[in-house]
Image 1: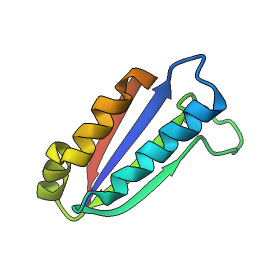
Image 2: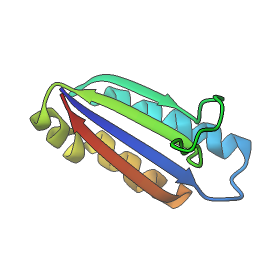
Image 3: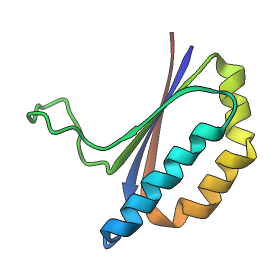
Image 4: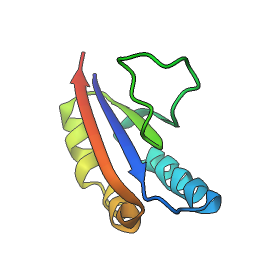
Length: 100
């Protein structure tokens, strides 16, 4: 199993509707056939601790069967269209890939 965790920092000045549309666009990635599970959310309202970072706006967590499924996702037209159509909305993206 491979876990693909992506954190987005959106551009300042986006209104609530733009932020909501961005989340809807992220959710469309669920249509990629190699995805086993997908989760989309924001920072959780938990107490601050020295090890947490809640500075991001949107978190995407994707579960793949293996690295080959992840690699296929990277070149899937749905994923490529998401990046091309939304890259002007973020200032930073951070990816963490882990494997069980």
